[in-house]
Image 1 (cartoon, helix red, strand yellow):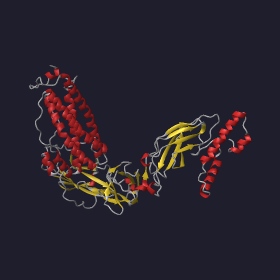
Image 2 (image 1 turned 45 degrees about the horizontal axis):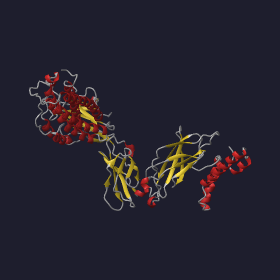
Image 3 (image 1 turned 180 degrees about the horizontal axis):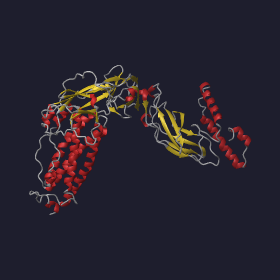
Image 4 (image 1 turned 90 degrees about the horizontal axis):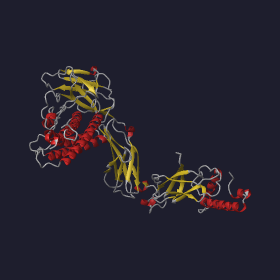
Length: 202
Length: 421
């Protein structure tokens, strides 16, 4: 039993998990993906604020931190949780992000129709979040950890309808919030997978 | 930055929507304490204004937390704090703002006007759209590639700067019947262009125009009427080959193939050739190459690499009387002239030459003479080709005599060819 498996703290771990080299490879690949997407998420945020105009993007800009349905930022105690639990939270967040990013993209298509790179990044981010979420889910399955049960339908459709009728400024703020959450969660996922990746802390 | 003193009475406005509509609140849940959300509202929300106009705005606090007032509130626009003299308290819960002589919006998503609490936290926001209505687009030009599609380009009015997102829509219809159609593939050859890929009729005129629309109004271009056959272009001629002409050090032969898409229709096609020396950026153009697929470049420098390109104009297709549209140039093809002991001549035209090059004035006069002959004497068979074939024959004869006799006959040379160099 590897050091890594001994640290999973999962009483349900059994002999049906994938062979170790395959698991290591999967974890490493997913970790690399998360690292790459963290960089892309940062670029998305920079691109986003650029198109909303000042003071978005200026140091010290602090808009109201509006709560977003189905998703909140990683809790302060997240890093203290067992790794499988952290990965479950990561996976749930990554599953909630794509519809929210789609809503932001649709609104930005009205507000900044010529910002083609921004729109493309938002579209890519939704796809990448899905891919990373699926990869994390696969890692959890390979680890023999429980995955979440059926999730409630995302509220994105309602958010989309509301966003259309909301003012432009709230829509800009909401998009900033969603892009910020995307960056926080992919970065969080990278860190959590780093605990499992070869060379990570035991 | 906007400037000015408080203007007249505040603009009348509808009761503004809250910062977040009720539906969004129901979705998001109640605002968390201390989040700063939904504690004030700016009116008007997202107004659209002409450059140079004025704006009267208000920031009304909701009284959450209880007892909240407009005391200490201030405004920022695009992150810049506005001078306090532009603000005044209308009542205990409402701070007014007067902006005059507004500049055009800094970004197309709107200028960010925000109302702040004393501690700097953002209470509410509204986006201002300040700009100009569109002016009439103009200078529409269109072309059809091989009669299969239509691409149009135009110039936006007022040099395009309205400070607002302006949508351009290319419309077209058959002149005497049919409904209006809207082009769907934009920005194909620049920001103000559109491509219609299919379902175009020939032998019947189209009416084409551009409509420009933004938040402040719309404008429509003049209508362009055209027949697809009058604006046909095609691909560059393929298989362009450049080769030496025997040992002639001042000539190159250029051959090409008719563009395949229209090769069965190019009865009157025109071609143009351009060429340049390898390390030069100056092209020389030969434009009297009509409906033939080969030509000789003459008057070239010996021992020199030349780049050559050819393009085609499919004018007269299906009987069109219009000038046609030149294709793009073919990919450059290179070849070198043979080396020579003698210094070569300067540039020349696409005319077959043999023997020593004659001077420019002589050839110009000869060209004028041949042109006159064609016009008045119907000697259509006379051409530079015949003249140069004669000169090539003269050169060959001259070399043969040199080999046989070992001397040059200066008298005969002066009679058979142009002035000696």
